[in-house]
Image 1 (cartoon, rainbow, N blue to C red):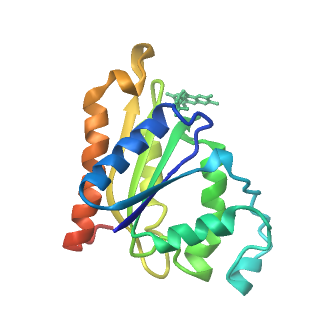
Image 2 (image 1 turned 90 degrees about the vertical axis):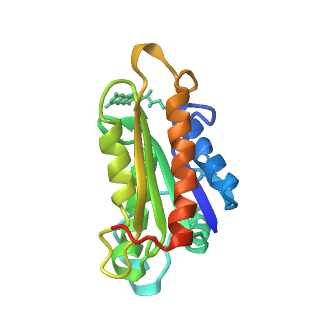
Length: 190
Ligand SMILES: Cc1cc2nc3c(=O)[nH]c(=O)nc-3n(C[C@H](O)[C@H](O)[C@H](O)COP(=O)(O)O)c2cc1C
């Protein structure tokens, strides 16, 4: 099983990147092949709503999107992790999702048949909502829906970082392992 972890924080050693890596460790321990993508280090333009992808099956913009898209298509599981900004994924992740949307609904089903996990961290509110949103972006396809392995939203209260919260690191790791189990058992969860 191939699993790609995608994070959108500018901080590669921050909270949302750290829980993502824990989930990837859990998946690796269950014998998955894992890789991570840092969206904030990628060059991804805004969707121009030109519909070129609907006609041609790929985006007109010459940026990093197509390469990332190929990696997604090649994977069996995707783990999205974003910090919660204004009760939602941050703009880097939201922009990426908007670029995926037309492919998802019309040109193809980019996330179809894949297992998905949504992860998020927030200072005091909104992390669960963001994690659930991230996990659900593949279930609206008119083609093949994705399967939600699980979600984890973490509140970093009282100035804590995720490294001060071993129980949540453990939960993230368990989710990564569960993704491999779901895939092996062909559990279908929409
Ligand atoms: C622009 C902005 C908006 C934010 N909005 C929220 C919010 O709605 N709720 C919340 O609890 N924390 C909010 N935060 C705090 C971040 O969620 C928190 O710093 C983040 O989870 C840290 O993740 P990282 O270390 O991976 O970057 C916000 C932070 C910024 C910079």
